Amino acid sequence: MISKVKQISVFIENKVGHLAEATDILAKNNINIRALFVYDSKEYAILRLIVDKPFETVELFRESGKVVRIKDVMVIEPIDEPGMMNKIFHLLAANNINIDYAYPYAKAGAPYMLVLATSDQEQAYQLISNSEYVISK
Amino acid sequence: MIWSTKETLDREEIRLIQTEKLKQTVKYAYEHVPFYQEKFRMAGIVPEDIQTLSDLTKIPFTTKEDFRNHYPFGLFAVPKEKIVRYHASSGTTGNPTVVGYTKHDLKVWKECIARIVSMAGVTYHDTAQIAFGYGLFTGALGLHQGLEKIGAAVVPMSSGNSNKQIKIMKDWGVTTLIATPSYALHLSEVAQSLGIDPVNDLKVKHGVLGSEPSTEAMRKKLNQNWGMQAYENYGMSELGGPGVSGECPALRGMHINEDYFICEVIDPSTGEVLPEGEKGELVVTPLFRQATPVLRYRTKDITSLDSSPCTCGRTTMRMSKIAGRTDDMLIISGVNVFPSQIEEVLLSTEGIGSNYLITVSKKGYLDKMDIDVEVTDSSLLDSASSLDNLINILRKKLHTVLGIHPSIHLVEPLSMEASKGKAVRVIDKRNSEEK
Ligand SMILES: [Zn+2]
Image 1 (tube, each protein chain N blue to C red):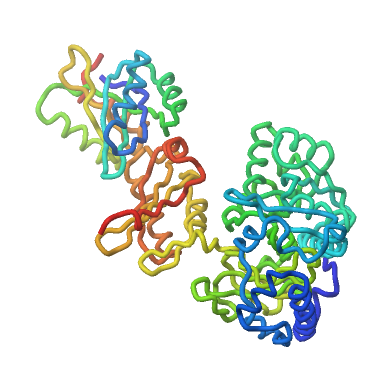
Image 2: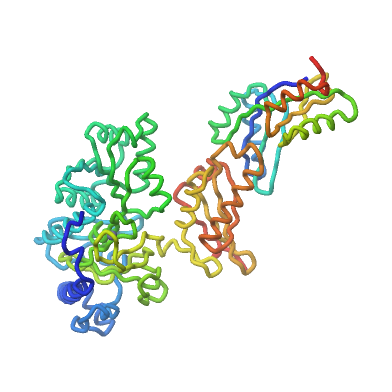
């Protein structure tokens, strides 16, 4: 399985409580988190989120003064066999596509799903969906 | 256009005029203001000791505190019957500084402004909107009278009511904007938010800006937003208001009206006069004032002087853009740093906001500078490396300009405005810390 989803990135200062402050906004507005990934440096963090109501979430963050970015990423469900991730990464590398970052995504009944952001989203999507490495619908 | 023949005299002729007027000014101040008699007595000099321009250094400085201590009329040289106008500076603390004008003082003031607006290319064909606040502040009425003198049509808007400012600019065909640089920038943004593009929909071509220091980056932004050329000018209420100097089209500093002002640059810590070209505190002696004569006024503004010939044809000395205030200067590990230098770097860097906070502290025996910068461009969030890149670019640029390596901290946009307010931009913790 492969699909496109909206990912939200939020800039957060690397200080105690700032992450909770951001997720407060989601909790208060009944927004459900499907996947969450925090990149953090010494100074700052980028919170990456996949939620059930992405556009509403962007508005809420903007209203509270946050720097927010929305962008398409893909979610893939590889076939549950050893070496399958390795094949997918080689497929992309062979086509000169760089993987910017990847993080797990959860769904009931699916053992392993992954969010992928790459240097060429469109081509990566085509390559993976035409491959036999992901579970077909 | 060059308004007066006094702007193109030989340097030697200028010095002769200054010497003659200086002798008169010193004698006049001494004879009419007890404050100067006392100052001269303390310094052990008499007016006759001042015979040449280099004798100027014998005269003690006058400061803002002197004005405050003699509030309201202690430094006045004429009785009330001779005064036709008062102005004052906004005193954020304590008494304001009051200056008076006789009919003669107003006449000279108009002449100085006429020269400065002419330098900026304004003529009787132009319509000038004054977006300075009217009132005790010298800026609005000062420019107003000088613009009338050259025959320009004046629109006395005062500051505020930005939507109306834009409407009148558009409907009345305003060509010249008189404002502070920050208000001019604000007005351009208001116009854009109303769906009016100042470059194509308005006719503003000249910006005569002053009363607060600004950076080259700010000028670039103003020129772009308005489709105009922004010119700066200099003055302060204690010196009679704007009219001390202004920029010509060469934009190589502000030409000083030298037949009315003597400018010196001193080392702010020792009071020693510095050679031409060196940066220091500007000291000004106006050469005409009847109501409130001032000798060697310490402006606290940092600049340098240049008497080399200018391509515009004027021969008068130029002072460089104000680099900061002596009050604002930070000494970081022996290096002089002005917040304005940092602001210039920040304004010319993409992806960050205009607010910043500088914190200076001690780490052991060393000074440490931290700068909080707002992230505003969301496209930087696509990869962490673009944010790290931004930090590196800022560090490099700041090192080139300042000669020191500050630590850069990226912060969320609203955090600074909400918690610390826009006005506080520097926090110096060095004196409050132990060790
Ligand atoms: Zn010039």
